[in-house]
Amino acid sequence: MKKTIKELKEAYEEHKKYMKGYMRKWRSNNPQKAKEIIDRYNKKVCIELKKLREQARTLLGGKCANPYQFHKEDITDIRVLQIDHKNSDGALERKNKIVGWKLYKKILKNPEKYQLLCANCNCLKREKLGEKKGGFAYLHSGK
Image 1 (cartoon, helix red, strand yellow):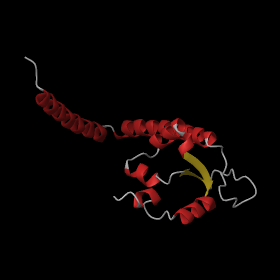
Image 2 (cartoon, rainbow, N blue to C red):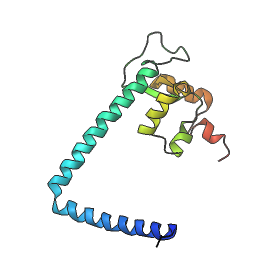
Image 3 (cartoon, rainbow, N blue to C red):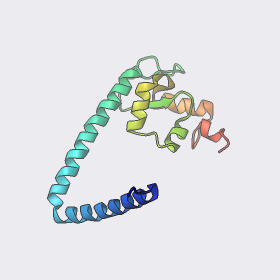
């Protein structure tokens, strides 16, 4: 006898609830092992995220785009470089949860939509375009 989609969904939810309880119990009985697994996973994720970030930064030129000729020398210090959305649609991306991994992968696919700016140039851009809380595109989208 075949199960309906509703029955399959209910079975899935029941199994998910069971596994959640089972894993909670396992973690409380094996705290050291659980911590080791989590630490190993976090370390791997951190390394992969750093690689993606570096690839995105390299693809965007590795220096401030300097759109307002604010400074004469190239700024390449990663501590002050920020990823900027050329079309001022960063608020919309954050609203759609395009952050972290998703953002860096999107930059690698569509680098023409982004630029690297130093903190000073990014502040100037926000001021000139009227980008305030929520971003220019978000404020003028009627939402």
